Image (cartoon, rainbow, N blue to C red):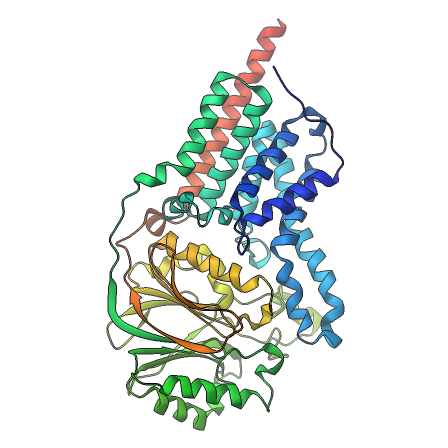
Length: 497
């Protein structure tokens, strides 16, 4: 017997999408995400909505992204008298664009393989967000499972495989509520048990600490004062003082662009930094102008009388650090170096494995690069840890720093590698290979943190195969969906005759 939900007003999908977003950090109400997905899938399965897939998915996606990305207004409020008028436009435009991607793929999936095509379409849309128009995989749907037992699936399936698993689970439950057959009920129980209870049996590797100490420096330089002639030297001197504190650690790390002058112009400041660090290895972020006069956002290692090492940010923020579709620059007569703090940043070569003189290897990430799960894969195999330096002052006092930290925790789970996160205004943290925050400095607070670097795991399935796992599972789901549709069509045809 088939039960039906009444035809709700169009705003119902918008509300369900907004509720679904509450599974993300800092709220972490994962059960509301699952409930909202189940209810929404049931609405989509209902015949009354079969011709409204695009519209309903767009509204669900817009609700999800407008709540998840509420922090997007903060960068425009740094100088509200100049950019403030753009804040509401950004809050509408970006969620609308991401919701449009969801709606388009969901519509195509439903059109070709009926209701289960919604799951196929949404999963493909999430994966495409990794690449489409420079990529923006923030608030990936599987992140709502962080801090649940199901988070252990990240090490096997990665974020997109787990998104597929989550959406299939919610769809199966919704379909069971709709059709109420014994087979569907058994399948729903089986799949939700697999999602939350199978991880109990995953192999646990004992984690130890490396015999290496590290100091995280958090100056709490608010964005509107960070580059000012009056306040920038004050923040710098505070970092010098924190770096000088005894006993000295093996490694001292400053956040992204913590040096307030370009590297090549900061001779005196660099000498102060080296003296303050003493025998400690010093890692910091700075703007760096290369020999061709291109500006780069760099992570720099001062290795005690060894050659200085540079890593240049490769994943640049669209419209913030570079202009998308820069290939059109000649048409618009725009120089790539025409705006040093806009689209003039030069892209680095990509992911790297950097060596420290104490024998440790690490993969560097600068700010935005941390949200791309596949960015680490070429280099992380032989890394002892992952290091992210970032300037989250752009987020202000919003939920942005919590969500940014959550994505670093997912990276630790995916690759089984500890993460060190050093943020200008917070949250600076030590994250172990299981994605747990061991120690941290809270947001909007100045201070430093001394700790020991945790050890990594031997390897994870996702670390070895990356998103290939998702691709194979996705293709298998598509094949099963088409075979199922063909079987149902043949059965219906036979019944009619």
